[in-house]
Image 1 (spheres, rainbow, N blue to C red):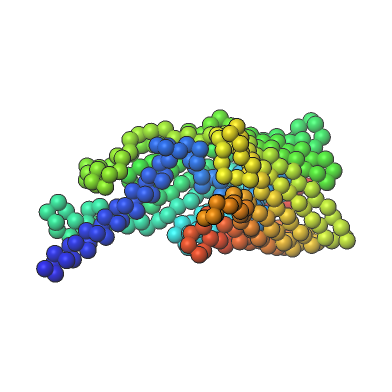
Image 2: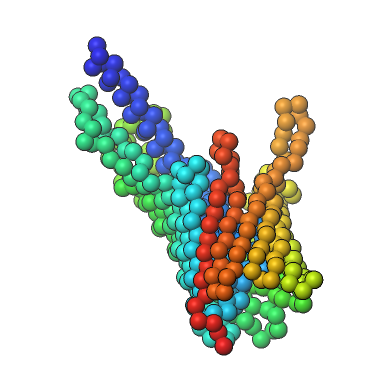
Length: 369
């Protein structure tokens, strides 16, 4: 009886893990039902400065992170080599989000940049072989795997002959892996421009302008397929996932006052054309999601940042609606060629811990003459 009870408990645990694995797998393979939310890990953002300002960067970004936000801003890199890195933990340290970038000015008017992003959940238990067909339990069969998304960005920015105008492009290679069970390769392209006039900066980015494609390939065992069938889940097949284009437009204004003090106000608007979304401005033809941010600086050394994003109309139980948003905050410290950044930012809400601590570091090597 005891052995039977243990088997039942293990079987229940086995099924719960399989259900979790199925949810992860099907969530990653949104091509089956939703294409407009694919590759969402590329919507989180990079750099604690940007995340502290609620991602309001398309017009003001001027460092190596421009390879992600707007490659036209790469011309703002003022050193021979600029290296940047970021780390954060999401969902109560369940997932790790890491980013590294390297910018190399080519000449006086252009800069190249390489960046890598990884968003992953590691050490996921795989108990699919824990109980064999005869009902025997073998703990040696327990394995672990990772579900991770990778992006490799190759960016280039260049000044034009029009004063104040720069342009740039980013080629994206995407790799998504779910253990040995599934994997995908993808490719896409972003193009952007910035225009500076006095204290004003204007920016625009066409994200996934060519439509980003992810080609999925599956390697499921017969045992796994049988489990999918028993749990009423669709057995995934090789497929193509599509990320639709999006336009991001923004502006910023920077003013220096009282000698060493500065203030930067920025506003970005994410514009989508795939129908009505639950954002601040939504129509059948397009949706507009604004996210403003500010940065206060002292002596180009200490910075205080804040912003607002994810404006949504929430329907209450009584039928009324209320407006919600997520604030973000950040701090920055610059000592000579070292930039240390911190942000308290949110990506969704999990239980009572919706916010994550984000740290990033940027180093300039060999100042340009």
